[in-house]
Image 1 (cartoon, rainbow, N blue to C red):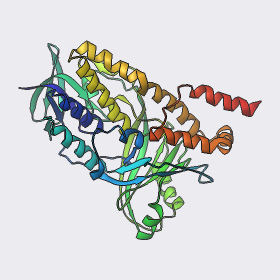
Image 2 (image 1 turned 90 degrees about the horizontal axis):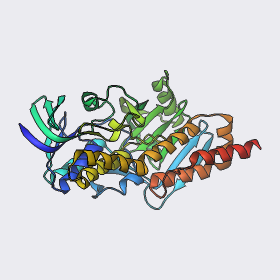
Image 3 (image 1 turned 120 degrees about the vertical axis):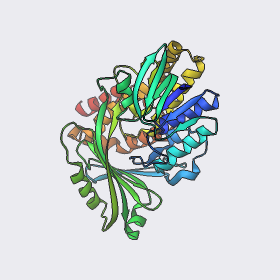
Image 4 (image 1 turned 60 degrees about the horizontal axis):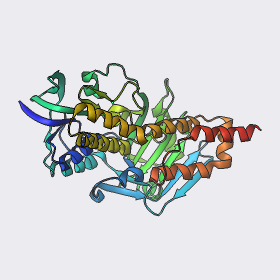
Length: 380
């Protein structure tokens, strides 16, 4: 049985980034991937500058488009705010190429990639994990669950109850007429309220559009119906071709911990997508960096690594997710109070959010108090 110091399940941004950082430190690492790379991955493909500027290598070869301007529409297209930066706010990628690039960079540091290896079972023997895959068994001192929102690894490792908040989304890769593409390819666009308690997006790629709809509300909402309405909002005359993908996004982290035995959860498996835009790539990469740093700094001592990883999450990522959840609740409840505040302070809110996405400021820790102050100002 082949033994590795670290086994990473999944080759998305979180897992591949972890492998990159570990490989760079000379730690014997394997990525266990159930498919063959590159593979299509459902995702809007909007990578914000907050995450991009933390990338340890150049990603120019996989960039489809970049936008220094973001348009945000509220109240069913009645109000639009624009924010502009000198450097791109959002970079468009296709996940098959992006994920494969990170894996390629990790392999340059000696990381092993095992494709077409589906994880079937995990057992723990003498502080080691025995990983039974569709092509044999592997042992490891540490296991990193980076296998996305479904994360069978988490279930196998003991997370039986899912305490994340999962929201539904539909994403379409859409080819439109040359005229429509030219018109819609000038900026990235968010339409808040195009879906009840959610938004629609239009992300121009190299030669097609990524269009999508999501809602933060529990219960049945016909997302396909709202997608059809959104096509009319965008005034798309002709859909040449479209490829639809449904998925879920975890916008609230697990409440029952991120480490069990020697298994660490990162990215969507942990529930680290940013709650306002539901962008998950940046925090996936960040959590991968954190867990790699924890393993390196602990000198591969399990208890110390667990303590360090949780400390790193507490410093920034977890409080930002909490603040983001409060802001998301405010943004997506289209009530008279929100309408008033956005009419009066909409551009300010939009600029602050773009600053956060651009990496120019962190989510404010006291966002609840600030919103209460604005509410009191209206009442009194």
